[in-house]
Image (cartoon, rainbow, N blue to C red; front, side):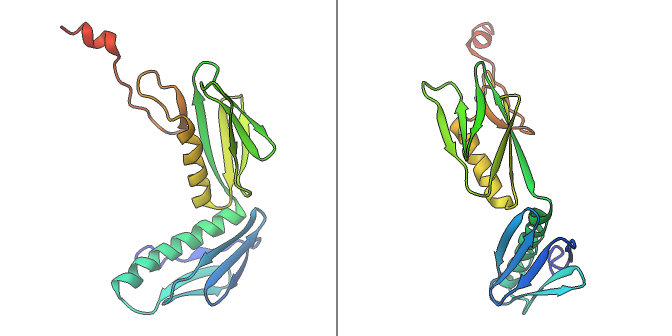
Length: 182
């Protein structure tokens, strides 16, 4: 049995779970999410505990077993607590601002970059250089954070650009260090 798949998921009292034939729906204080259930995978809800089962021991079913359990656990956490991702903007004159449902980035281009946010993703800007994205859907949040980072990825010489707060940029020596090594 899958080590991850056999673990139960604790469902907080604020989260409502509805199991259908082909999907599991979650509703909580942070929003609503749905996880599709592949054929051969079952979901059981007993007294605040959610468990995932599989019909047989095929390799395909074993792979889906752990995957569905992880998706369900992330959905439960997302609708109850939500997820956050911090991005830092480094560079002289680089800054961000939130205007309605879009993120305005000034990151060294001749123009302002207007990044539209998906409907369930919210952004906060702290001190003009730290962007905090939050969303109940972990996959959508990671995808949005990656797209924001891709507007101006950090460069290795001066470190300017948009990076994750926990990201370490491997710095390179510039031309002056290379010419002095003769």
